[in-house]
Amino acid sequence: MSDLPAYIPPKVWTWDKANGGQFANINRPIAGPTHEAALPRGKHPLQLYSLATPNGVKVTVMLEELLALGHAGAQYDAWLIRINQGEQFGSGFVEVNPNSKIPALLDYSAPEPIRVFESGSILLYLAEKFGAFLPSKPAQRAECLSWLFWQMGSAPYLGGGFGHFYAYAPTKIEYAIDRFAMEVKRQLDVLNRRLAENPYVSGGDYTIADMAIWPWYGALVKGLAYDAGEFLQVHEYTHVIRWADDIAKRPAVQRGRMVNRVTGPLESQLHERHDASDFDTCTQDKLQNSK
Image (tube, rainbow, N blue to C red; front, side, top):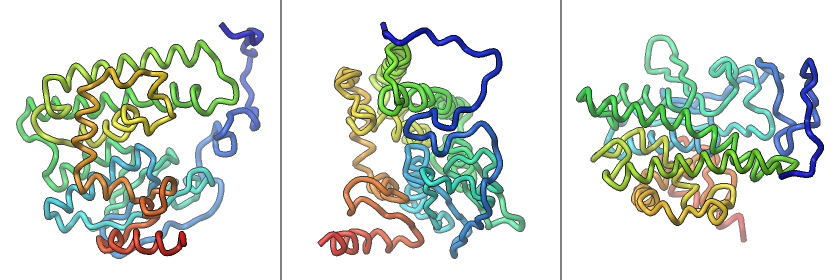
C-alpha cells in the first residue's frame, strides 16, 4: 500500500484551490456563472454547445446518424465550448445548463426555445423528436433505456473514478486506482457478456444505448482512453472489441467524432459544424494549414 501518511478528514471541509491536479483551474464547489458571455446562435433550429469528450461525442454521433437517415430537421450548428478555459461557466451556457457541463442543446423549432442538458437526456429527446434509434415496442424500449441509464450511472466510475486517479490525479493512490480498476473491469465484463449474445447492446438493433456507451467503453477497449489498455488487459473483452469496431466503421460515427474535436491529428478536428459541407473542407483546410 501507499507510504503516504494517513489522511484524517478535518471536522469541516474547506476548498483548497490548488488541489485537484490537472483540472484545479476549473473545479469549484459552487454553481452559477463566473462571467458574462452570450452564446452564439447559427442558422439551424438545433444549437449544440459542446466539446468532443465522450459525452459530447454521443450527441454529435446521434445528430449525424439522424441526418444519414434523411431527417433534415436534425441539421444543427455545433459550437465549441472549451471546458479547460472555463467557457462552460459563462452566463449564456449556464442558462442552458445550470450544471455547467457539456453538452447542452437549444431547440428553436418550438414556439419557445427548449433547453436540454445531460447527454443521456439529449439522446432521448432527439430519439423521441425524430422517432429514430429508440424501439417502439415496450419490452425493447425498456431494454434500450435500461442500457442508456446503465451508461449514465456507470461511466462516472470509469471517468471521474478510474480515469482521474490513474491518469490525472497529482498523486498516485494505490487504493483508489485498485478500487476503480476493479469496477471498470466488472463493467467491461457486463458488456462483454451482453455482447456475446447480441450484436448491439440493447439487442439486434443499433440504438441510442450504443451511441451512449461506445464513446466511453469503445474508446477504452481500443486503447484511446487513459493509455490504460495493457493495465486493464482490455484484449480479454473480445465481444466489446468486435462491437466497438463495428460502430467505428459507421460513416456517421466517423463524422460525429470530428465535431468539436480539438485534439488528435489536425484532419480529425472540426472545431465548429454548421453545414454538412464543413466535413468536405475540414481536411483540406487542416492539411493546408499544417504545411
